[in-house]
Amino acid sequence: MFARRRISPAATRPGLGLGLGLTAAVIAAAVALTAVTARADALAGITKAKVIKVAVPQDFAPFGSAGADLKPQGYDIDMANVIARELGVKAEIIAVTSANRIPYLQTKKADLVISSLGKNAEREKVIDFTVAYAPFFSGVYGTKAIEAAKVEDLAGKTIGATRGSIEEQELSKSVPTSTVVKRYEDNNATIAAFVSGQVDLIATGNTVAAAIAEKSTARPPVLKFVVKDSPCYIGLNKDEPALLAKVNEIIAKAKSSGELEKLSQKWLKASLPAGF
Image (tube, rainbow, N blue to C red):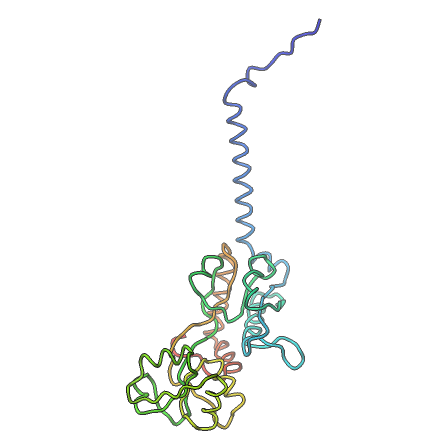
């Protein structure tokens, strides 16, 4: 005869199933907390690896492009190296396009995106932004002799602009009635009008003005005032407060020391705008 197996009363208590469920919940919460901690500790990972991976497009001079030696160069590359230097690590520059720069960040192929990145509500849903590190704006430029500190000062003056551009649209809404706005069909025609002296003022982006200054040293455009401001920010993944705070600290230091001013002079051929 077989002996009957004794079943422990504890095994039949309703509370046992609840205990197992509670244990599973605690484990799941611990795993989730660990994942959050790992995401928030990107700075520690960079410091440990002694490398920071920075995504930079190389088709948008003067922020990022390939030099004569095919090595990356530009404002953004120099900014990446400033950050790496301050962190005591090496900068690994990863060439990306404007289209894939944010996916590279989200898939952890890059720690930062430095690519003249503008900030908007849609992007803020998926990534975080540092404080501004570089100016990007549309402005009115002219020869050194011309004085024009605000749009009202354009009264009686002639200014060139590319038809349909942000600059042309903004000026059309605000210039005095006595201002003559000469509209050209493309940027090349607008640039040619300024370089040849057909107009003494031009409304364009700061990167275009930098290119003119580099190629036309006899008639370099001088910024008179900003028409529309859209500064550049560094992008990084969400939930990385330590990295965000550190990069913001580095940018602030570079600004106060004059290093950002040097980068602006070197690559944009102009001083940082007032209030930057």
